[in-house]
Length: 167
Image 1 (tube, rainbow, N blue to C red):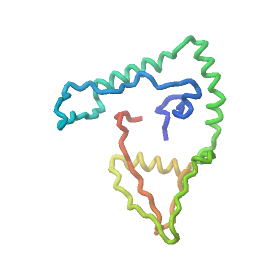
Image 2 (cartoon, rainbow, N blue to C red):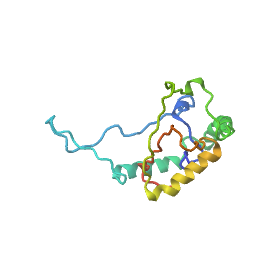
Image 3 (tube, rainbow, N blue to C red):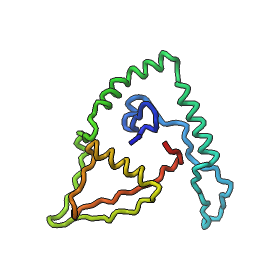
Image 4 (cartoon, rainbow, N blue to C red):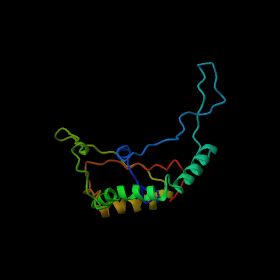
């Protein structure tokens, strides 16, 4: 599963502040020319994958990604600083689980009570993508095959990416 969107690394927001990284320059409001003083009419905000604003943001981000801040020396120092952390992250075996105690979730169920959610339909166009992902999870030990006629099942939900970019 490609979580880095073909970038060399991905840093979770929980580590960003520790590394001195912040999310800035993000839009925080809509420009809406249809604002009405009548409180009974709420303006409609529609998300459009191909909006001019999103294209501008993508262009701006591409420019920023291709032009690291600071000098080449500062850029290299930053990479050298986080390189050991990246190597530790890459050394985590596939299929292993987070060992932070707070990450363990237990769902206590009464004796004899089970939970079965019928599988949701997956659009035919997504069958290969979904099957490839399931195969990867099985191979990495993230999931395992359930026995036949099990009383336990959690349905898989397939959702199209909102940025309309296909990798």
